[in-house]
Image (tube, rainbow, N blue to C red; front, side, top):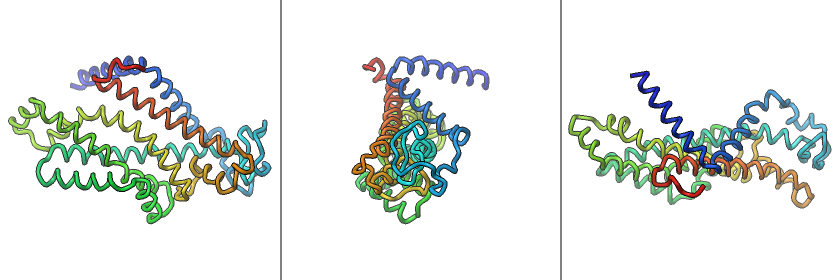
Length: 294
C-alpha cells in the first residue's frame, strides 16, 4: 500500500507541476513569494535586530535613501530596509496563520453544513450568514481591541472573522460531491458520517481549499496591514505598522516618500503574488478552467 500510494502521489504532484508551469503568471507569483519568504527566514542571519531600537538608531531623521541607508530612515533615524525585513516576518506569519485558521473553520463548517440535513445544516448556515453580514474588518478591529494587542490575538481576530465565504464555497462543493453515485453506494455499505466526510468529501474539496487558501493569505495580509494602520497592531514591526508610522509623523507632507512607498510596495507585491498563485492553482485544479488564457 505504501509504495503504491507514494507512487500515485508523486505522479499527481508531477502532473500538477507540469500544468502549473504553463501558467506564466502563477510562476512569476511563486518566484516573488519565494524571494519574500527566503528573505524573511534569513533576516536574523543577515541583520542585527538592535538596529530596531530607537535608542541605538544612527541615521538622521527621515533621511532620504543613500548608500548607508538604501531605503532611507524613519522619524527616529532607523533604517527602513531593516524594518521592512523584520516586518516581513510578522506580516507573513500573521497572513499565513490567520488564513490557515480561517480555512480550517470554513472547511469544517462547510463540509458539516453540506453533509448534514435539517436543523444542523440550517443552524450552521445562519451562523455563516451572520458572519457574512457583519463587516469582517470592523469585527476584527473590535476583537483585537478586546483581546489586546499581540501577534496571536491579531491572528485569532482575522481568522475567526473571515471564514464565512469559505464555508459557503465548501458547502456548495460538498453538496455536489455527495450527489455522486459512489457516495450512495458507500452509505448503503454502512459508511458513517465521519467516513463519508473524511474519506470521500474532504479529498474532493481539498484542491478547492488549497487554491482558496492562497487567495485568503493575500486578504489576511491586507487585513493585518489595515488593522495596524488603524492602531490595532501586534506590538511588533510590520508593514502595516510602518505605514501607520509614516502617517503619524507626516511623511507625506514632509516629502519622505520612501517611508510610504517601500512598505506599500511590499504589501502590493506579496498580495499580487498570492493572487497570481491562487488563480493559477485554481486553473490547474479546476478542470473547467483549464485552457483559459494565462
